Image (cartoon, rainbow, N blue to C red):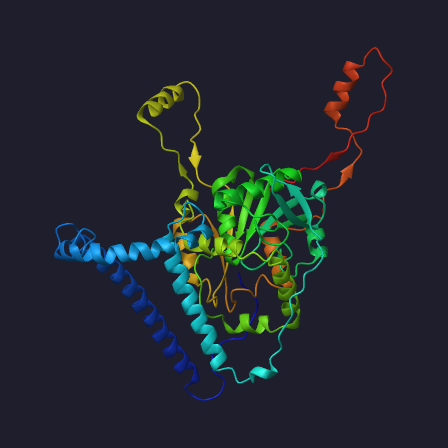
Length: 458
């Protein structure tokens, strides 16, 4: 997610500077279009190859397929090798395809290490002068709840208490992060001003939360729901940014009735580089201190398996698609339609809908290299009801990290004018007062007091 204000990108000075910038911009857009068409052409060629060459009657399958002489000789050797390496699949959730997941993880890791190598190779700083930071293990500090399966879930509470919150928000953290992140840099005074209770929690195996033996995105949504129930939250907003967004989308899919809405950005793929503004942010001492402490908390258990599981969730089938969240009329069988038609002759029948009924807000940095704008455009085509806020000059982190004005803009967009936390009144509701007087008509009425809190409708 992404933000801020920047100056124009036109060249100052020189007669043809502005024209040259326009030419470069046109060439860039043309190359992007060529790249997109090339990808689509590649997909079409792949489908043609599958249909025409990779079938049981084709020459390739007959001579090199699994049942051919060549396939049996080579396939047997490969099967033995893969069998010996199959213990790596224990690090993947049970419902994930190992071939697909590990191939994506391998290539992502290969490109990532290549990018790191190139960066180090071109880094002018001498290796001996670079600072090596130590990782410290801090004393436990989280509040924890016990989940139905006996696991402990660690969480952090910011802003106003849940019983006085006008709005409640739950923010699942990103990869290599923890409950300490929340909305990075958000001030308690701003949360108090809007009457917001912000809850963050450690994902299973991160920070002080116990690991989950078979976790997936559905169990992630279930953990979020139980946390809300434990703290008495009726309805809440879910906040997702960067890789934490997949947990926010999962909440929309599996617990839509408890959500007031979602805001964040979708992030299912990894890029190799960050934009200039993101790099500048990461060099800020405030960000470095925050990142150091957050990472230390994230890895406190010293167990790599939760991180592998989180990466596998990123690159594998989520168990649902964005189409499942699209608001549409509920499909019925022919007999059900007949019954509803007969019923409509006597009473008014309301249409039933499926999908997520609440608001969805997506903030998209137009300079985001990790989650490029075309991904949000794709989401918006599937979910046209989602409100997309496009942010010029912003990168992947700059709008959500340590930006007071950005946080205020987000809360104002979601909640309107700040009204502070709910007020507590000792005034008895008039209807309840009348009922009490009727029940005690033969007794001396006693003065009653009741705490009435305005219920913030999200």
